[in-house]
Length: 296
Length: 296
Image 1 (cartoon, one colour):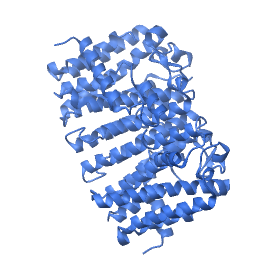
Image 2 (image 1 turned 30 degrees about the vertical axis):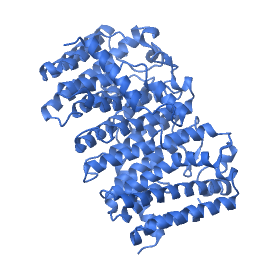
Image 3 (image 1 turned 180 degrees about the horizontal axis):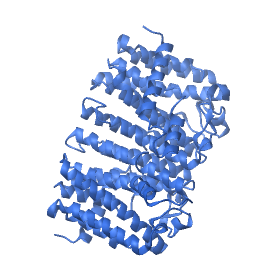
Image 4 (image 1 turned 60 degrees about the horizontal axis):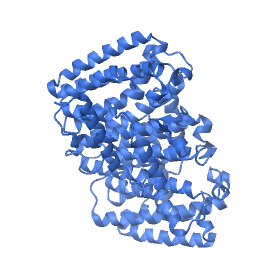
């Protein structure tokens, strides 16, 4: 068995190559839009969501090739949300993945259209003919992703985040926000990865749901810790921004030490759920461990 | 047989009622986002795209109830695009359907999220369980809508429109833009309406494609004529804006008289295509006629 580092690198390269194939070439009209879509989607990113999709696929015995469209669809939703988030009317950020953000490198109207078009592309590739042997499961996957991306998922979390700026949130409210803002798409990545190979048994699905919920929260707590501790150079995005903008974070509710302990607790729970899949769940476990150990 | 006016009113009311059901209630969190989604989607609009879906459904013998999700999905994509179009970084418009635009009534960040969430909702409702008896056709419909909405459809047309502001376009370039910007979604409305009842024969599909292409262009030519001639009160949006912004329109390439004659020619072509469906194609014909006769 290869090391997790080698596996992760392979998953990232597979994602990059597949996205490069799925995204319209920058020679196709409208050229500037397609170039900008490739600018924000390619050449960077941790690719955590695709990794989760591939790992969940492995857990139920699917081939990575079957998981590719689902992995890329979830990543495109993530990339579109970052592109819109960075706009001046939202977080107003100039730097993303170590590069100027889309509206800085191009312009605001282009960044708006890039995000819109990437969302469509996510559904287009997941609905492409031959993506899944069973159309009924394919429809289920499309429904799951659309729900996760929408107002009762990611977009809803963004709205709560916006409304909470400058306010003191309690732990329950903060978790409500994160379960929607990042948790919904992480859950979609895990479930879509597992569904990509075929139908999913109820017990396996319940374990994957629990795994996703735990690592989604753990990831967010660590994000707050890293945002407070790391430098802009290490993160590849502006550090310390959340606190500066008066956004509620876990660190307004607990110490860094407690936040790290909370992360460990969530990760232990996720590891137990991954254990349900035996040796095939090893990559899910690796990703859970990576979340507490990462420094960016 | 009821009059077209009565049929159209019924189709509009059916669309309004279905959208009111599909949109999350404004009592569900996040309340402000859901309220804003309902603000832009309900209580107005010509509902041309849903009407086209219902008419295409009738042409192939489907029940309107079967067509409802497709009709609403296309309309939600349309409404999201209007909401983003009106933003200051795009057309910067204050008035839409006789009401303040979303970013004026709420704020820019909310308008951005409203558009994003409406796009997700369009795919969510089209992918909902039980929407179509045949999952393979349902997947085809999802693929068709996603492609029509994306960078090689509506978003691509927007990008060309943006790039062409202040430039003199030829007729071929202008039609390329419109075929993408409005034509792609009109085509989707017609095809989805027809597919909603079952599979579609190749000959019927070809006729519907031709019908959609003709009325899509006719609609756009008339839009330019009306934008130049009508008043803001009649249109329910700012009149004369295209010319003021230096946007290419048909009237920069031909006289109003020639534009009206061109519309008539396109509509005659559409009527011939609708004739393929005999009496069942009557509503498609009515809509084509309505396009040249409308005043708003």
